Image (cartoon, rainbow, N blue to C red; front, side):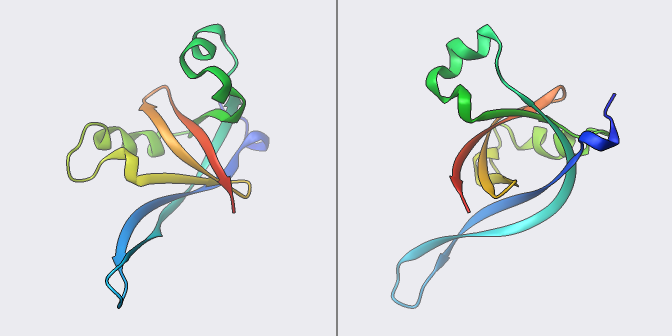
Length: 113
């Protein structure tokens, strides 16, 4: 059960490559939508062995009605619209999505905005 006071708003972004007039490509981000989530630190022993030193930059997030999870799960192992193209913007930082399951989404901080 998610308590309303612990919910935070995040933005789901999709990256795309845009061709510039000089022929080079730049990566820009399109906002897909905003979602309310609850975050939890990843600090158990199993995840520590999987992610190693990166565990300090990781969060497990869940949405109250699993609408974010239901949107991202079909993107796992999809050839055209892969989950690696999606990012989460949370608290002034951009996160990549490491895994998406119905029980939650594991994200890793890339950089601050």
